[in-house]
Amino acid sequence: MRRILLINPNSSAATTAMMVGIAQAAAAGACEISGATARRAPPMIVEPDALAAAADEVVEIAVSNDGKYDGLIVAAFGDPGLAQVRERCRTPAVGIAESAFREASAGGRRFGIATTTPALKAAIDRRVALLGLSAQYTGLRITSADPTELVKDKLRLRDALADVVRHCISDDGAEAVIIGGGPLGEAARELKPMFSIPIIAPISAAIRSVLAILARK
Image (cartoon, rainbow, N blue to C red):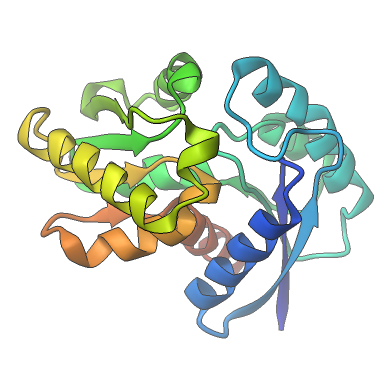
């Protein structure tokens, strides 16, 4: 069976376990998912400096595991270190942001992003632009509460994200909405049946992306 390593660029082992569980469910038996957790990063990446700093450790983890797995997933919304991992490793690597953007924009679809981290807006917008998807991007909608506090209450987090998803659809004209963040994975799964348009869960999108790459090998 194919083996995939999910690299969590933040230092929360609980978040790693949650994301591995979501990834394993999305894989539907097609592969086995393991997790690796960064040690030098904060428990949740909410600032641009922390996102940038996470890249070095992501690369270290990837390089030390190169060849031990069939695929790698960088599981922070911002894909820190992904470009360097691809340069230095022979193991195929995907990022949850890139995978979600490509899935959401498929067929020319207009897409928005709902997330909790206002300080990362510029970094997320740049990532969309670097992938050449700005023309389809309807923008970022952000919950109002402190992100580190919001993720502690699952119901409150889901409801806050649902509210901004509605704005993405009704105010911005999004035809698909990405739930922007690895730690938001459980909320993304719960939000899917609440809306008639596609709600894109980045971890699941990354699994589909890496399995598609492996199927071509």
